[in-house]
Image 1 (cartoon, rainbow, N blue to C red):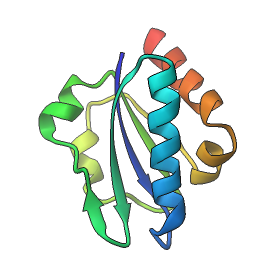
Image 2 (cartoon, rainbow, N blue to C red):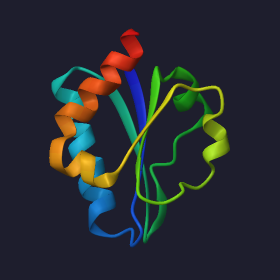
Image 3 (tube, rainbow, N blue to C red):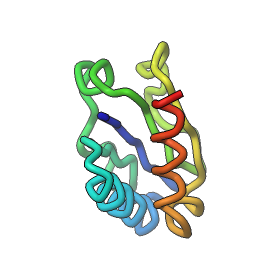
Length: 103
C-alpha cells in the first residue's frame, strides 16, 4: 500500500510537524509506503508531486485548516482527519486508512 499525507494546523509550527512524524512512524510500522507534505509556518515542505499523488492508494489530509492546492487531489481517494486525531491515536487513523483501501 502507498499513501501520501498532508499535515497543516492554524499556526503551522509544532503540531503540523508532530503529526507528520507520527504518521510516518505509524505507516512504517504497517509497511505502508508514505510521503508526507507539511504546510506550516515555513510554507510547503516535502511537496507532493503529481506522480506521488497518482501512485498513492490513499491521500490522508490531517488538518484543522484548508490545505493549499487541494484541487490536485481530485479523483484520488481521500481521508480527512483533524490534527488532534493524529496526535492522540495515530494508529487508529492509519488502520482506518488501510480499511478504506481494502474496501
